[in-house]
Length: 148
Image (tube, rainbow, N blue to C red):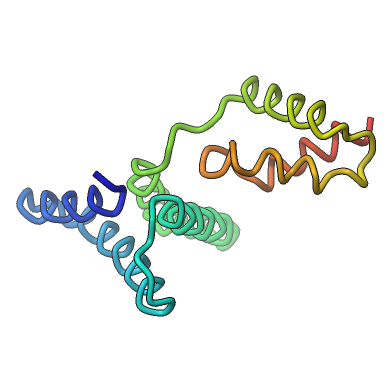
């Protein structure tokens, strides 16, 4: 079953179980998916759905930061709960050790020697880490590694 199909099934399950908060988040996910499908007139595959889910998590993390700076912990807690529901559909995140090994492998296969080669390294890592790691953090680690 596709990721989109699983989400739609979970919407039905949340409706039947009366899980209002979960249903609200699942409907946000399906609305985001449908928006892209209608705008681009395509059927989204799992990779595109993962991109949407990652974007939703990133938006919520940014909101949490802003809410905490504004002393609105109540709203930050709501955003965190939404992240947990969205994260159920994301693949398991890479550990630091797995990520470091992936970076080392990409550096050795691309022959990167300096920070100018960062694009090559990130291109090699992106397909393997997409959806399984925060690419902003990966970029920081690659930059630090190539600056040595």
